[in-house]
Length: 296
Ligand code: SAM
Image (cartoon, rainbow, N blue to C red):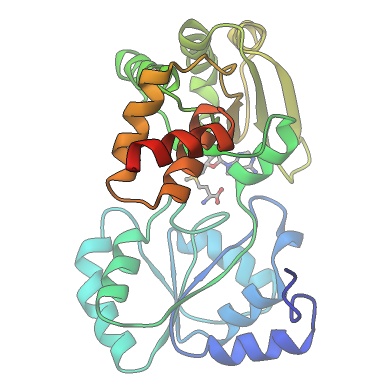
């Protein structure tokens, strides 16, 4: 059902009023400054403090929008030691905004530990949604948009990377059927695609590069073709790799029973059947009937 406030401009003012204290996670553009939202600017303008990865990167966004708020760094290496001081300020009523260099904070970016600590202390945590490279690459890829599995950066070393891909392949053989998404650095994308092709074969995939920027490109093909292309062309810029789910593999009755056994231990018959049907691709009614039999 549609939310009656979904496109109501008065809901903007209301949500901003709600955002006046606590920790607010603010999404910023992934390259094109035009993608910043009204709510993001309002949240940054009204924050007592903005936590950012690299103050120079965030300064550009703030300057472009005539925002003079104070920025302090929060990155992987200082997050733990900063948490107690930040929680104390939040408890005193400060409104603190968290951004990353680009896109949605916490998504392959710092902030998760602070968010958990704030939640544990009962501090209000709100968010301003916006750009995210993984989701944009997914919807441009032409591959099934859901279910999808976002995997962040794959391991950088060859052997660990192949093990990571083989783990996913093994998961597919017992029912995982999701479009997979990784972030990757341009100098590694050729070897990453070669490893992907080795493990997943000539599976459909897409390489999304420089999204929202001047040289945006989405190259679609199978993994063998893409590995060959990037083996011979040095990629530039920021990259997301999207790989199609494996073709539905016949999941045997014994495997369905095993999965249902696990699911029924913690879920209702309906939810267990829905979960198993969704990962195996077997019809929901068939799985539901079997789940009822097992439960009964
Ligand atoms: N938090 C960000 C988000 O919401 O997308 C991602 C941060 S992660 C540290 C940075 C990686 O995201 C890059 O190395 C690249 O893989 C991907 N990325 C970020 N911006 C991108 C863009 N404009 N086009 C393609 N990939 C991008």
